[in-house]
Structure formats: structure tokens, C-alpha cells
Image 1 (cartoon, rainbow, N blue to C red):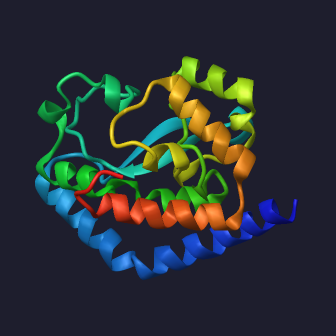
Image 2 (cartoon, one colour; image 1 turned 45 degrees about the vertical axis):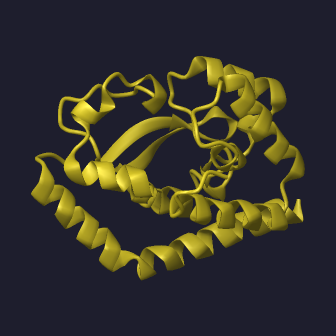
Length: 190
């Protein structure tokens, strides 16, 4: 109980501080997106949160206007055709995810937890229900994301999400955060 309360307070304080610190980066990336292609700077998409509550996740827009919506990246056909020039860099460096700090501040997400499923990923949502994974806040990064470089089958992803649920603690969260930073900015596979 103490850990969950601490985690929420920590998420709120750290996301607030990061938003302030990264404000120049937010503005710079927004300007690059506007210069690169027509359309909004921020992309909002319906996702599944804690206890299967729907929320809008925020990301920098990396795709051209007219790209299919609500399609998981691994099922997206010819994604390079739809990705903007700036979008390719944002996706590769994971900088497209930083607007999710606002989701964390609002209480939709946590810094660490399973990545939130799209509203229409019924197979993933159902599998997570079996292990209680939908009972915790989804995260900006998670154990499943840093445990493999390639897209994983749903069963493996949920196995890793369940492992996180059953082993959640401050040291594990720190480990996941550090490995995420290393993985995002290293060419080495973990």
C-alpha cells in the first residue's frame, strides 16, 4: 500500500519537474513538427488505463495526415510510407513519447508500468485481465519494453507485465528506468 502511494506521489512530482525542465525541448520539437509536415503537433489516441478506464494518450505526431489510426505499430503496413522525416527521428529516439508526461501528471499513467493497450487490442486486454495486469497504471516504459528489442507475442508481453505486477518495488522501477534510457540511446541490444 505504501509503495503504491509513494509511486503515485513520485510520478506526479517527477513528471511535473520534467515538464518544466524539458519545456524548451517540447517547444523545439513542436516547431520541427510544424515545419516538417501539415497537421497538429500532438497526436491523441484512445488507450486503456488502470482498471480498463479509457483515456487519451498524448504523443508527438510522427505520421502524415491520412495515416490509418488505432493500428498497433507492429500491425501497421508500410509504416515508413506514412512516417514524416522528423517523425522517424522522434520514433527512433522515443522522443515522440515525452508528451505522456502530461498523462502521468493527470493520473492516467505512471512512469513505469505496462504500456497502455489501444482501446481495440481486445486480445491483449483480455490476456492482461487473466493476470490482473489491468489493475495497475500503465507506464511510459515497462519491463516488457526493455526485455526485448523486437515485437513480442501477446502471451510473452503479458508474462513480462505480470512479472512486473508481482515484483513491483522502487528498486525494480529504477532498474527499468535506467535500462530504458540505456536502450533508447544505445545501439546495443539488451
